[in-house]
Figure 1 (cartoon, helix red, strand yellow):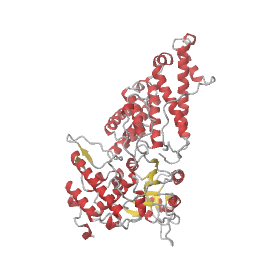
Figure 2 (cartoon, rainbow, N blue to C red):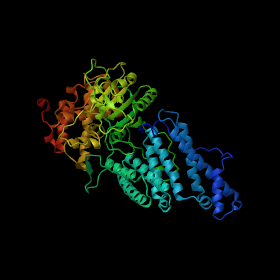
Figure 3 (cartoon, rainbow, N blue to C red):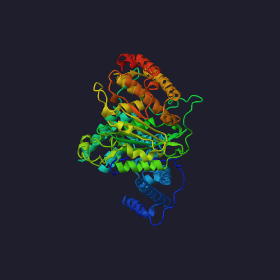
Figure 4 (cartoon, rainbow, N blue to C red):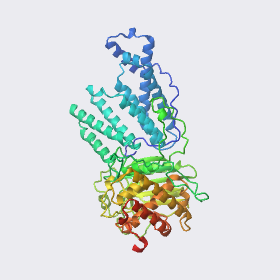
Length: 606
């Protein structure tokens, strides 16, 4: 993810490197760490000459592998953050060395304990680095199976108490390593929807932070407490709880399951395009975030992924995985996660993604950002005259609107205008804009005749609806979890699992019928059908129509700006205002006993 000028690792790739291979022999000149280790041995009561040659070689080889692994790991930050192939071989070499290091310390633990003085926290540090490698490989490839691998290593650290002795040493930097391990573990568990583990980790992290700040007079106490606040807010972002009979919370996943997207009917004429790349951009002020991942970004990320494959057979022995085999199912689209990028950063990633887009593939751009509005009337009405959404100016912005008023005579230079995206319409482009000025992107012109669709959020929500903007946008929630969004606008905050599953099944039926409405429409723009062959885009389109139809039928959504829009426009009578779809929505409301919040005869109420 990217923030300002400093940009951590970014995603990109296809296949994982195998965790096998050899490491070149250490050159003779690299003995500094080994010599230091041997001096430590001598100072602890032994003499260097008394060490058997085999044990001396074991320490030498371990020190070399440790040196090499740290060198390669530190080099990851210098890799290009975008692009498909430049980084892959480097990751492969890093995996090779860490795998060899992990196995080596397992095989020679007794010698390393006696002669090197290997501590358990050092083993934990190696395991933590491997977990980080898998996490960053997930970011690069978007393959959720690697999250399971990262979880395996992080979980082993906790189960085997590798960091348990850190607190007994008078070294605050070691405690910080432990705290960072917890923060990284929490991120992986959030992405895997392991909320029960997250809550345990947050409790443990809170205790560790309290102990850390009590023992050391540190300046970073406020920052660590902020981490706790952020993750607590992130966990509570969902506006509706699903409950078991014993009132425990059911954890629901919103990744694409096997039965998730409506199936195409036989003979249905749709395009053969597939979603290959996605830029997920978050620049909303004051929205809940954790680890530079806003709630909206998190929800869209999960909407563009399949459920992780079950690698349970490989989870038992960290370091022994053979996880490089190609997944049997179709890959997830690759994603770049850009948190508060500057305009130049956004454009750089966009250009790299565009350049490497395979044939017959789609680039998706998701913009969750503060709106930038035009400063005044313009003589012309071109693609730069309607405003757009804000990018990061590298300045602290307290009020998103304040920036619009600083220079009335010029356009905001940190705004992403519709016209900025024109060059990328040379290839199939699918745009989702969730912003108070999303309608600026209605003013597109398809200059190159390629498939182009923009799904645009409402620009305002009814005042009667409790403001949830900090906890994520309602529009994005509909695209991620339409049933939860439906419950929220219906005034429900909790639901029993049985009823939830019944409603989910009915919602699948609604999605199937929406798919038929789209493909049977005689007046729909062909761009929608071009994208309809891809499962992810098909699901987003059906959810968008469900969202729009729900809001148009809802009694408190009465202004035009309360409704989503699209470019090109959908034929309303055949889609979002179709009587058959309206009947389905009323039936879903009846199942939930909330029919009273919807108009019965919507067409007559306009």
